[in-house]
Image (tube, rainbow, N blue to C red):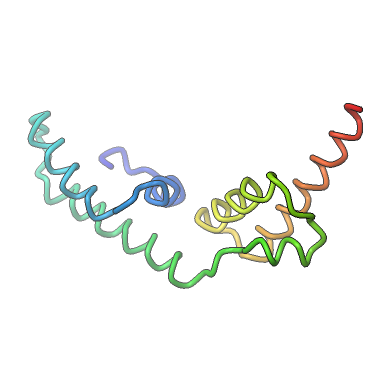
Length: 119
């Protein structure tokens, strides 16, 4: 936090955390444990702002679903989870939903082409 990570990086980080609010407690314990010269209030403010940004993105952007990928021609399979996660990550990093979906289809097409080349 003190190195002022980009919003996209903290969004991806917060997306992996089960309860982002617990990060405040962890950050406070870390500041006290390391005896950092910066007051915890500054780090707390940073995390509160970033959690609000993350919350707004999650609230305002319904993430792509498997049904949408199916409708775009991607067949069901074990690749679906990775494609959906990639699309979610793109949205968390600031890309529009439509772009994230289009890129997921492109990645699938590339995967399909590479698997045929390996045969």
